[in-house]
Length: 270
Ligand SMILES: [Fe+2]
Ligand SMILES: [Fe+2]
View 1 (tube, helix red, strand yellow):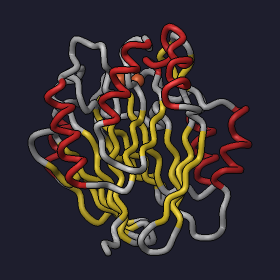
View 2: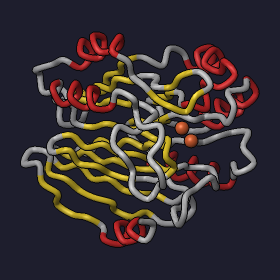
View 3: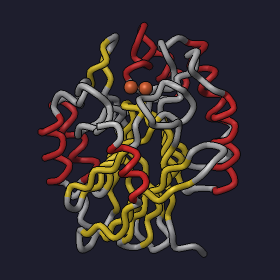
View 4: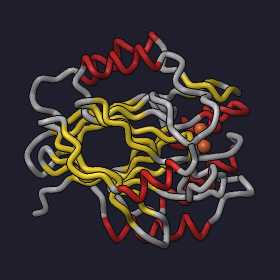
């Protein structure tokens, strides 16, 4: 049995947008179905305006992923026009926890939150949510801990003027570090990036299916492989290539490998 636990992270599908490209979606579905990751995480912005028909279209696409374990959260676009009601009707409560067995015997726990607010693009977790997050992530049994929210907690380079970072980002980062969270998954900026914060790795995925992109970035999604203490992050361009973004030794808090080409591509945007 393979010892690697794999997460496919996709975000910013944006059904209903004139920039939505179903060829990108079909490529991503075929690739991820072939790969059979342990978890598919859909990290928000399923729709453009939160309309019911847009959610139904997103649900139809997500159903085509033949993956047993799917995690779906909403983004700021999904909270437009009271879209959070349709999200809950179709996908259920976005504030949840999930547990998955890892091949090395550990448990992997994912805690998700809805960081969106109706009709604004800003994101916030909110102090009221901290006790439940703490309760859900607290563990001393070697659990691998993952936190998922749509908005970014750290600024993403190459995206222009900073906007919509989680309003309580500092407090949330401190809370997550106090809980020994290993991994934070976000979307929103449509530019993929990985921020290692000592023993916590924050991964932002790009837009998987739209041409709502910034500068020279391209539609892509992210693959995360956890093999013991080694965590590797790949950027996958639907229908095209897969590139290693970075690889970390979590135990020794060390960067092991970095794909220079990806860094250079991003540096062109600064
Ligand atoms: Fe988006
Ligand atoms: Fe967003």
